[in-house]
Image (cartoon, rainbow, N blue to C red; front, side, top):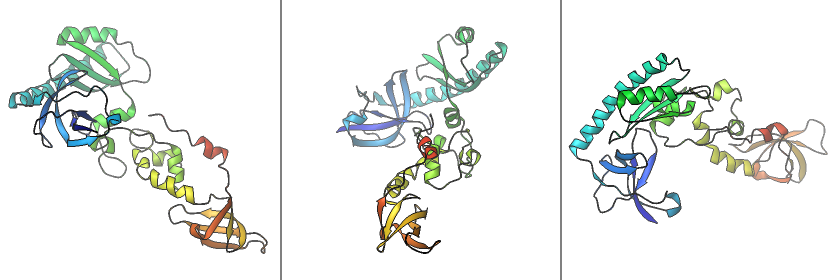
Length: 286
């Protein structure tokens, strides 16, 4: 086990681990750390904790120091510069007639690099744009193409539930989501009803899936052959959450259907998933 603290650089962003050294750090404290992008000013989002070494990207870098007032002031100035850089880059994109949408701008704490995040339908030749931006800002320029999920995380907004996007408020990382999850949970397979504002499947489909996975293991699938009170029958309906079943008994008069629960039956032969269900196993690309 290794002692670490968690540092977040943007609201709703991913939490990164750093070694706390002998510093006394509390939640909400600003710290200066060294990252692959250079020096950065972040906020302590997780106090000292013990984590498994396998969950750490090595080598684990340590917190350089607690941020001073001048550091926090510098970070705030950078935020203002980012707004100016956004307007300038947006105009340059129009000047070069590029089919791309600027989403966000980040300036590293030490002003050594400016990152521009954009979305586009395909590949974009932005070499001339980079040259133009470099001549204006006189620093290293980097353009990164992102997906629609990342765009929603950066811009934020309200979901169909009326609450702020999960991705921009508390989800630090995206998890794979598939249409199979919606089927397992008995939801409509109409994409318009189970997709978020970003147009991809809603992240919240993942929240309860582990419970459904466990229940599906013990709940007979429709079409399964089961034994119920000494009689054999075929499951015609099954509720994953409640465990309620409807069984068409064999050797009984036609149309003889009884109600039961999964705890009252024994599975003799499980029904195989349909080809459609097998196709739903494929996770949606993130």
